[in-house]
Length: 98
Image 1 (cartoon, rainbow, N blue to C red):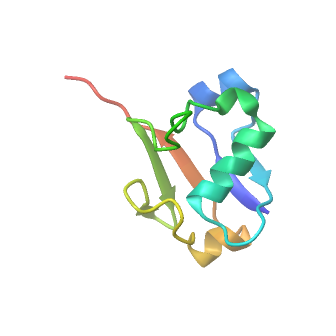
Image 2: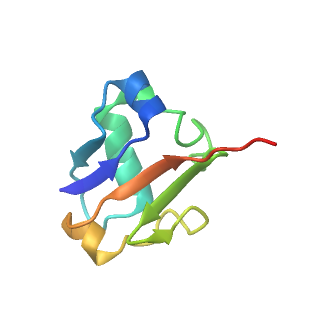
Image 3: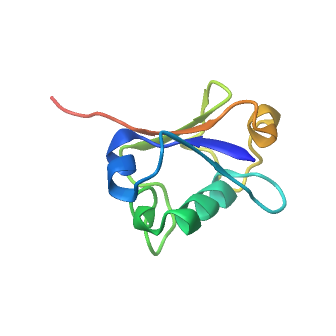
């Protein structure tokens, strides 16, 4: 079971808890985890990544094992601790302003 932390604005939209668990087949990657999250919470489709491109939306970041994975390939394997469920994949909404 992969643990995923969902940011508060997306929890309100989807009805998800602060942390959800999802199962993925094969290698755990950002892409496979997001596929599972969007399948379980269809309201999140298009909020974390684009509908057509499946690219990360601006101001959304991914963290795992203390590292920023936002600019890494989404098909790269997640750290072992995340794949085992010991640590969560964190989806974080960035804050911008001036």
